Image (cartoon, rainbow, N blue to C red):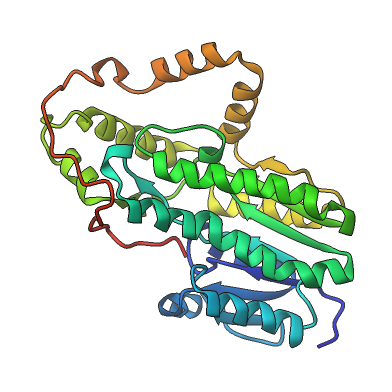
Length: 314
């Protein structure tokens, strides 16, 4: 297919920020779009008023599936004229302290939030290198800048994405391929309600102040809920900023796109580390009560499989 319009592949495009970005790119009108989601979520596109056309292609893609990754990148390269922009947006979040997550929980988060995006980038790079042009945009998080209480595994997966993308920035710069980490903080939405929890974290929350981590979970839940409902940033405002980044000739490696992400980015960068951690802990809600419960608890086996609420951010 020959066209002057760049081809954009967007993962996790059926809900949340991904859907807002899909709509923004469609409204912009300067791109051909391959919008992807898990097969069972493709129906969300029609519900949102998005249908296939000469410039919009709707494709199933679970980023953890080798076959589906290869299929969608192969179509972009062999049939649609070559991929110009890869946007790794699909991801999940999970609330769990380290003790409450199983090996499967940790691996699952890494597969979706880090390994999947890196594998898609690896598949896209040969074509981009051949054309000596391309963009790889990874939707990270403020949780990739700072460790957040009760979010150890999620933060770990986002830290991995940050490090992987930074290394990739150096690797592909000689071929005029730009790598960017989009860093949103809180957005005004109910998406926090879709965050995964593990069997053990749910038990701690329901313990009625009998679990050592009860106050951690309850107070962080209140803080996140309160902040997300009051922040000025929205999926739509963040989507507009991402489109502006796509249009930039030389985008930065890291682009915070909400006020709180900018604050945390600068706060951590310039404040002495010892002072930074002291201030951050004191700022946590009711942190003076954390640890006041010292009762014994049943610790999940290190390699156990927990029964998670299975929700992905498509």
